[in-house]
Length: 218
Image 1: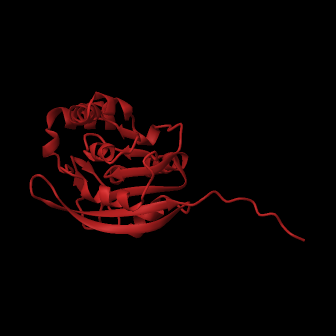
Image 2: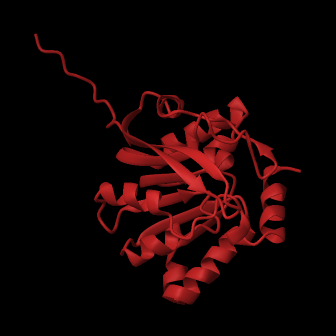
């Protein structure tokens, strides 16, 4: 079963509020995004947004340039329908819903913020991580930010039947390479709907501005 089939099966057979990563309100994500004080026309992409409520909260906060990417079209449809019911069909239509594998996605534009809660830790293949880094490099504008969360070093070793990688903040920041500086890190203890505690590492990374060639003075 490939990635698309796996996640389509998950969302087709389980209720959203039952999956281990479910959050009624994505408080840590919102806290970190709010701290960046982005303009309301900032371009934001939520990687693996799936059925997450983050897009609802961002719409409610007044953000107007939102993209939600997930490998599961079923998850995206759940989110789109929920947003339409709560905020109206026009609000849901204004969001860009992208069904794609982030490791094979070609963004076609730059974003001010890349948000990823719990996608990167599924990339246990170094080749997938390399493709992810390449996509981040193509998608995040100079001066833009990455807000990312993975399981912490003492977090689970598997999730939804798949193996995961675990990171501390330094390790996670280094995965994206020298073009990104670590601006902030946090540790979160997430409680699943089943009542299990899961340790997460969060980082906020800022992309350096492109280097300009220095003119020598003689």
